Image (tube, rainbow, N blue to C red; front, side, top):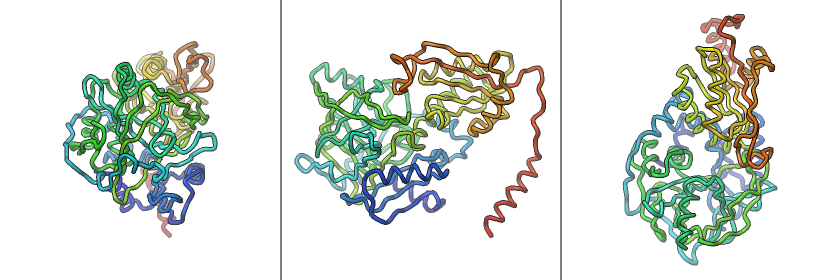
Length: 454
């Protein structure tokens, strides 16, 4: 499985989902502007730029711009996305080592390495410069050899040098810290361009530090991930990737990195200022450079939302089986707000569910709980429930001085207030919501679609 196979199938079955742009485009703000202008119009196609000035490689972006493509990659209807995500995340398949693969069709090492050949995009005016935004950094635990894979931004600093930040302080940060304590650089492989299921099982999946994320990726793929040995570092890479950069996170070296346009919609100065020295580049002969527009683009925020929704749904259902769905809306940066639908069986249960959500995800600032007749993926319905089922003096509570998201510019010293809204109906009875027969709605849809085909 690989990126191009996914795109070919998508274009074959849903040609409206891919826009090919044949004319030459600058590797800069025009790409970001097109993605965001389409979003403003409610459109989220994959964009395939066939000619990018200064590079021979085409650019593909917005692959993750709409959750329907997540469901397509998993082979399930949209309503089954979260359940399938968690089901596959529990599977483990050991990777299959091959001696070579498509990603080794072109190899450059040493003085041949030149990151300037890649169409690295300068996304926003506030960014420090061109950034690799779709790089999944693979490294091995210095003590156990277990592989971790995670998304990290990379600022172009020279022909063989990028700056990066490990400010999430998760597994890669811990690996680098332990290696640095020994005076050692940490070997890494940076994967750019792969099947979405690889991203789901590596860069987006969160688990314990002793889980090998190539095995998790195999679980998502439904088959062993095929990997090839490292060229210049002892880290294996996916054989079907488009590009792989090999190198080392330098020990004892820090250089200014950023600012970078973050998911909050603000430029962030926060950075651990780590440096990666690239020792080898390999890629397919006709490689596609896969980009992610950062900032508050739908692609960037959906990458945060979908896995967190799946995890939160599992956690909440563990205590409250009647929880129907969980949504992290784009209006809340897909990180800071959460909508939960459920069928409460006792007074106060919606409040308890909100507190459980706050305990599970420290980044959350607002949780709105609604009844199971409300579609949490339709924000107008959620706000309708708030308008007609909530009284502020009774159904709103605020918890001050709790840990919050470090990238939220409104936090003070990392702490935030959290607000919950119980927009569920009282159990003692409530006016009935007006409805229509399902058959009437189906006939209306058929009539509309028939007129559109004329």
